[in-house]
Length: 564
Image (cartoon, rainbow, N blue to C red; front, side):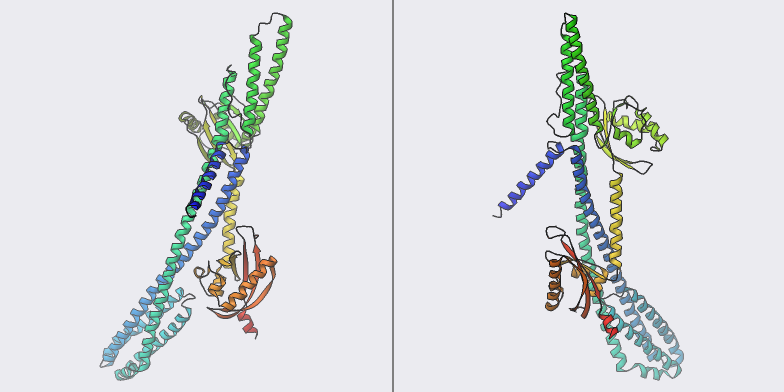
């Protein structure tokens, strides 16, 4: 049973790979436009997932840096405060051991200075206070204030009354108890900041997984782009080059030459069958010319027949031109000297070429017209030289260029037998603009969600597990995202509270949406009994992979207490 499952999965993967190979080679029944648009659709889907994972990676990295920086800064602050407390105690002992006020003065000055440094260190630590150490730090700050006031009073008594009075003030149980509590507070803070550093390490591990997902999505996008190039080479550029070569052989008198790609069902197949009809017409003309017509009537009949075939030849020629012009991309064919053999209407439209530029014109003439119209700003001679070099090397290539009017053009180039060159060009400006707009919208929505005061919680409707919470929701629940995401309500709340939450969730799934807020009282394990107002909205249907629902939560506990 276990051995059969991997085998069936391998067979399914093999069949899928064969389908992709047939798709790329053009043996399917899809048209060229359908192939290109299908790959572009898959690429857009992968790009969308790539954007979502990029946002997730940035969020994890930002949280990690913040937690790591605050834990490190807090740990340094704890060490500095501990050292200052020890230094103040040493200065106090100097006061106790002094026999007169003059000897005591230097220790008193040092103690006062250390007191100021201790107060500044505690104030600096306030920047690192979070939800996990706020209560403990508040108590610790009060004890530090008592410690400083006690030492200030020690100095005053020693200087203004006598060293004996200072010793009497310092030697008491209250002082020792305060010192003991300060030591306990420092140890507790060190444990909290150690835990914070551990959580930061966990976030770093999660970020590594996110980076791996980004790599896999990027690799998928690269494979789709490569597949697009393979499809264009196999389905369009290569096929057009082979059909062009067959047309040249027929024009030179080889009427027995085979026409490739006759079995295809797309635009290339239609073009190949038109060329075959052209070949048959030329063969018939040659047969008629070889007949020895002995009479004028036979010659007239032969001329009439030839005229008919000439008409058919012109019709097939127009069919060939119409097929090229019906392509959704721009197309231009060059010979080995970079002179234009053919171009379609879409290529003219892309570069706004006038009717004076036709087959027989040069690539240099096209570029000079683009310079005048503002669509090219490079060196014409160098550009033509680069094209001739690529023609000579006979290496296919694909790249993008940005025109001066803001448009982006995707170009696929492939050599032809005999030294020619075929270039298929597509305007992808709108696609690139949509990608940039999507990226900006993702960043914009993430910023809004993270900064609203209302808690926003997203759950997977299939298993009721938390998949996202914003900062406000973290504060309301009293837990970090690492503690919440991936868990259910029963793993976070008491049985009573979890049952209430799941009942509300099931009500939403039954009625599709919940426009009016529902007020409930929940036992929060971190913040106690809270009164919350929640609205839920379902996203997607039960048959979709992204079937989720979003809960918008407002904590009304403080408002109700204030109203009472």
